Image 1 (cartoon, rainbow, N blue to C red):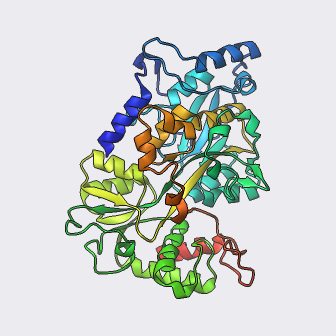
Image 2 (image 1 turned 180 degrees about the vertical axis):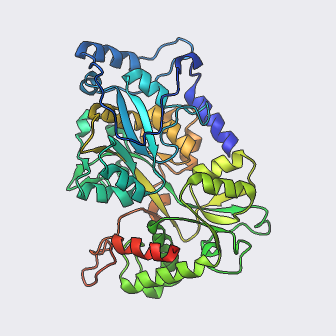
Length: 427
């Protein structure tokens, strides 16, 4: 799978000239953004740069990025942007030379990209609350907290040329809008998958989350669990399918009885578990070493581990899955708002969006990405246009005391209690 994805990426990437790459400028930003005095590009120069960025030429090594930067944002570009992102969302070629969508952005906009990877949504919220970052790639269990806390601001779609081509089903959702106003640009989506060791499960490949929660499978004692309170929803999802008498209809809307049942299941799971992971590289290493025989995973981890020889495969189980629909959001305290707006628009544009979708292993958010050479197979594999596939994928969402399933005769357990229960479970 990894080799086929690399071929797709190369077909999409065309031949990016190595001489144009320059120095690696995608650094991890662990401190507050420094003050910048870079002179703004005047409107004439910005217009010329925009035209150059979108013009298709026959010259060898040039790419039609299919992106029209906003002239006003380009004119006011501050020279850098400091972002919080999931690992793999801002690749500059240092991990794999075939994957680099940071360098062309920097060359087009003169905005140096400084990246701080967040391991969990909780960490991302904390980083954004520090006021040191211009924006974030937030999942649904972070976006609602960021919006309600005033950490991010609404956007005007007219300022973003890529917004019109985003799949309609990803726009104006509860996790990326308020009262019909968008608070960011959808990045992509994917399901949290079940990864398994193909040698351990040589007799029959698993197709159920039961190997994660019930004793008696080849993975007993070697299960890998995502270390985050949001994982409580995975237990609730399994209960929704296996214990219908509990009445769970939304894994993020749990009354006290339903919540207690999910915690009890997680306590049972602890005896089967050898690893709780937050850093994706930790699970990747365990899969490659054969220390983990089953686990909840992301496709990017599977891709990287398979490339290094791990004998694994992954599947969306019959019960469905939790998942993510991520959104790029602009900080209310952004020191570099123009560069952040440009980045948000760029990452959702056809070429850049196809690059990150292939690298990370997810469905792109831009419909035109699927029209690029070599992308049709990827979009089919990740069900980019298959609405039915997503019907049993429950995107990460922040639990609230007001039940998200529409119940008015019950009080649900809010996310703070999810955090407390998870911390207790893990101690």
